[in-house]
Length: 294
Image 1 (cartoon, rainbow, N blue to C red):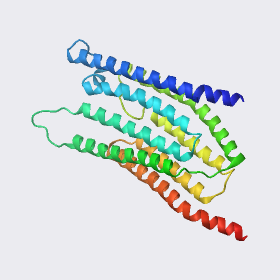
Image 2 (image 1 turned 30 degrees about the vertical axis):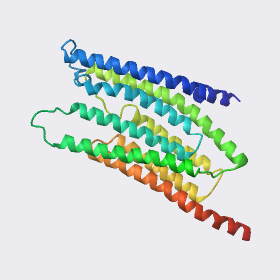
Image 3 (image 1 turned 180 degrees about the vertical axis):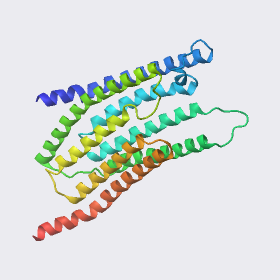
Image 4 (image 1 turned 45 degrees about the horizontal axis):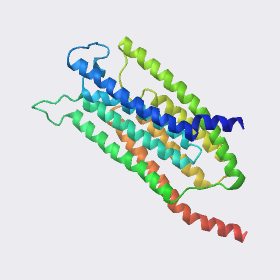
């Protein structure tokens, strides 16, 4: 009963509505504040060698609202965990899609246009990131479409209730971890900026959080094995975890290698989902027939 109250408090609908409103308001305020600093820097009113890279382009102001929106989307990801493993993975790719978009804006802000602009390595890299965004975005939508059309269900009755309860408890715990990791990452990044040895990159917060998320995915996989030993379910979820691990490695990998890993993770997850939904329909009648014959 106490865990249900904690879940409603941390992940209930009322909390979600409140956090959505706060996120939007903070995103607008953060954008305007960051834009003000960019304008002050452009006019020569503000300058600091440790923070100039944060305000030397008006496109830098997009980083703040997207970071706030990403924080809310991570919270939404935690809320989805009790629903199904597939929905959780699909939400992960929605978060990663926004993460890549934020990186593209950051890299565009570093491009210095001039009359002799040519297609240098920076432009090629941004084009590759844009391709990764399209693949990730398509994967996120593919998960939504396929799961809405064909919901994945492997448990019934008491097994389903127990499994959902365990995942709700895990999600409530992850909210606490999320707050701790976010606060710790923000503190470390802020102190690094003040010391002049920190920069904007996707590793801040997301590297640690996705590591924790992968551990929770593995825990869910092990718990699910208590309720079913179905190979299709085990293989499907293992494939999803593999895609999440690749995403985690991509977050910590810069350049073309990181972008390639993002694309690989998306293709792998989408393929695993499609195969499990398509072939799963074919295997189920066979399993039911064998059971009836026995």
